[in-house]
Length: 110
Image 1 (cartoon, one colour):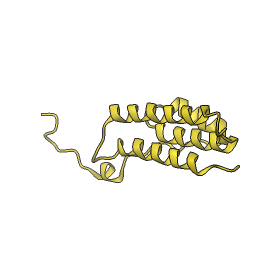
Image 2 (spheres, rainbow, N blue to C red):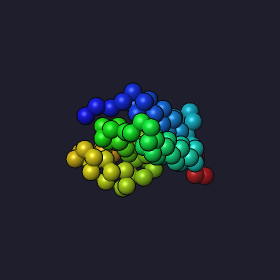
Image 3 (tube, rainbow, N blue to C red):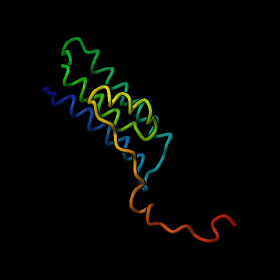
């Protein structure tokens, strides 16, 4: 399926912004949730533009990217959406390598 440049651009911006909220430097769940809602609104606006109708490839691509980006906050819904679009499952999120190797201090809890 063909995906337009504009659909790829919107998807990349939305996905990138959401993923930044999950990084160690900027970790912020509320911001990630707001970014997810903003990405959803951008998709809705793009798909409702009657002057430039979206192709099936555009719709599929944008929704797949949305599912990938929002998966850490909405794993069930995004997993189902991604599966319905691709017949594949999204991989379980793994903590960043830095967190896997971090040793918990002995005096952390008193």
